[in-house]
Length: 373
Image (cartoon, rainbow, N blue to C red):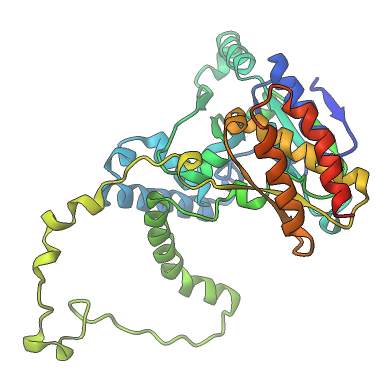
C-alpha cells in the first residue's frame, strides 16, 4: 500500500519532500493540485480516438519542423529532446512530467487560496531505482504481460530550453496504467496559496533563449492554423470568410516586374551565423534576480517564515548562490517593495559567503522586516 503523508501547508510538504530527498528515500517528485492519477497527457486521450489522432499528428508536424529548421538539427535527431520540448509546450505526449526539485513540485501542487475547491494538493514521490527494479521483476514473473513496454527514465538536457532547466524537469515513460501497478507515495496538504519561492517567473522565465524564440514562431503559426477550427467549435453557426493566399505568397502587382528583388545579404552564406544555436545556460545568461512571493499584509512572524523559506529553497535549487551577488525582488505588492528588496540585497551581499550565512541571515531578516513595519 502506498504511504500518504499529511501536512498542514505546501511549505511543510516541500520541506518534508526535501528531507526525503536528502535521505535518499525519493529522488523524483510531481506536484498536482489534486491527487488525480498521474497520467501522461497522451494517456488521457486514449478513450477519445479523434483527439488522440490529432495529438499524434501535431507531434509529427512538430518533429518535421524541428528537423527542417536550421540550427535545430541536433535536437531533431534526438527523439527524447523533441518530445521533451513538445511536452513543455502543450503537445500531448506519452511522457509524464516530474522534477528533481521538491520546491518546483510544490509550485505545481499549490493553488491560490481563493481557487481552492476543498481538495488537498499533492506531491507524488518516486524512487526511480525502486520502480526500475520492481518493473523488471514484475515483467519476469508475470508471463501474460511480458510484452508490456518497459518504463524509461528520461533526463534529457535540451540546450537553451530554459523552462525545462528552470523546472529541473525529468520525464517518465511508462504504460498508461503504470500507477495502478505501482501506486506512488504522496504528501497531501490543504490549499492555502503559493509558496514564496519559486514564483511563476522562476518556473516560466520571462526572458527567452534563441531556441525558445524559434519555438514561438512554430506555435504561433500552429495557433493560427487551428483558429478556424476553434472558432467553429465555439460558434458553429458563425459565417467565416475564407481568403485565398496569393499564388506566390505575395501580391505581384505591387512589385516591379512582378518579382521580389533578391538582396545580396539574403544569400545563405550571409545568414549561416544567425542560424547557429549556441548553448546559453539559464543561470549563466538570464538569471539576474530572484523573486519571492511575499504577502506584505501578513503578520511579521509569517513574513519572517516566508522569506526564510524562500531563501532556503533557492539555496536548495542552486547552492552556488552563496558565491553570487543576487538581486532579491519582493512580489507582487508594489508598496514597500523597494525598501524590503534593498534590505535583502544588503543582507545577502554582506554575508552570502559566510558558512554560517543561513543562521546569520535569519537574524538580519528579522531586522529588515522590522524596518518596514
